[in-house]
Length: 120
Image 1 (tube, rainbow, N blue to C red):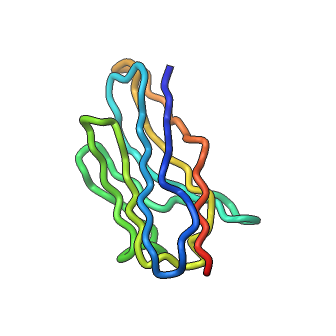
Image 2 (cartoon, helix red, strand yellow):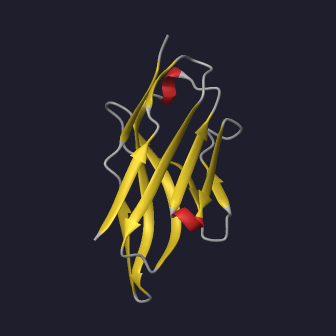
């Protein structure tokens, strides 16, 4: 069994910062890419940022320069540091992990989501 536990969401004022964490646990052989998606009310889920096993990152244009993604492989954890938050960043943020329980069996897992609300 694999579990993804997200934390760090909440209410923040415009211009503020938050850090999201997502820790994977259970029977894990290896982890490939890890990332964050978000879904705002009435909109489709979109990629925010991802990071591969080598540490290369990819960020959406809407968050470049404001968000940073990182990972701690020893802890099977991915982080999303969010700064200069805007009201349009308000969404449910979902962790996404490409995880292998065996060298030939890799599955993409989703977290349950954590709400980020940017409002004064």
